Length: 147
Image (cartoon, rainbow, N blue to C red; front, side):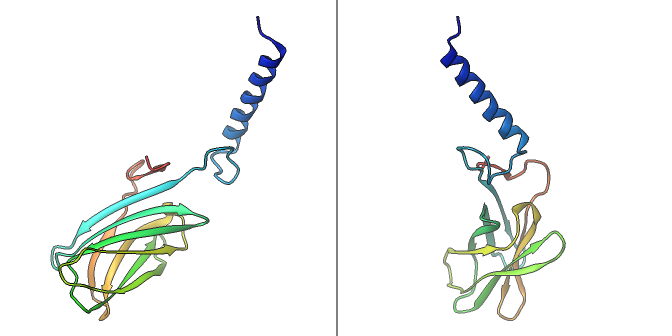
């Protein structure tokens, strides 16, 4: 036997579920649980032996970038650039290298994670130190809530 209160609860919950499906994953209107999209990639350059690992999190229409870099020269200037799939480049962060140190730098990129192609660390003389590409295969290193 189903009570009126239980029926009303079932209809309300069913309506919320259908509403969430109809919104097609729009994170700004999803009730209750925010959707976090993230990605990660890493690479080692065969010439410089520098290593770059980036982790990205989508937030407020841009991407939060956290990069871990090793193998840089002490007291040399570096800049991390991001590139979109259409070739647009944007600077993420500048810093000075430290010998034999793991360095973590952060910044933002004005693009959605799905539009990011790769990141490049350049020395102040504009030579490439290390490049890391994000995989575009379905589901690789990219998913809601970090999965």
